[in-house]
Image (cartoon, rainbow, N blue to C red; front, side, top):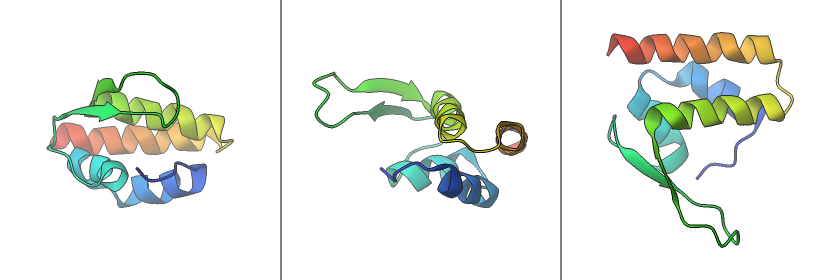
Length: 87
């Protein structure tokens, strides 16, 4: 999984054209409505099953924590979500 930073999220969200593209950037490959299993190395916790919509929300939250300008990020997330809803 690609290390998430505000900068690479910003760049990749602008490049994303679909849910599949956005998820593929982070996980290597995924079907558009796949249920994904996210893991945290060394945490001892079981994998977390999430949908691609949840993954997008997680990315938004992490980028906000990383210090990206939040209102700008939200605008981009909504733009990506708009693309997804048009598929």
